Length: 246
Image (cartoon, rainbow, N blue to C red; front, side):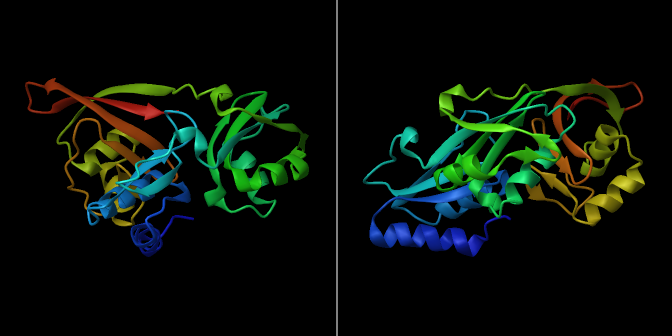
């Protein structure tokens, strides 16, 4: 569940009033962007994001008075666990589902890095012991769970397909159609239905213009990155490089 703007604003006002730092639970990339925008309304407080490793997407925020400064990242209330077992037939969703099935809220769980025989998960300190005691199976597979240090996390290997193609324009519908191999009409329908995000912000306009480096998510289809404009063909089409994450 995403944090609401009101909830983040309440935390920020609490820090401002009490002049003490405070941590959120894990925030999605979308919530992190919302919080950064919210911080521009306050002159005397700031925030930093901590996810357990550099490339983490889900992170907790430390909101703190500027005059005090941020605490060291290692003091943040997050830990890591490792799950060992035959996970080859299980998905990221299976792992998350087993954890949430214990009654744990989504915002207590950070990034999940799944491999064939093990899985590293960043979690809030509040739930570490509970998971260690209660998580014995994922799906039908029996697993072993134990704590690891944050610096032992095996960071995910980013895999993607390279797509080099031409598009009529760099509108959102055109890039989505090329990146996800859809018709432009279908891409437009999905955008208008609120299923597309650019840099973790929902976009409803098929004509929205994409820029190099933009990350585009399409619910139910995955994620792409509009990497680069490579040139223009003789017929006026735009030659582009797109990365589709696997």
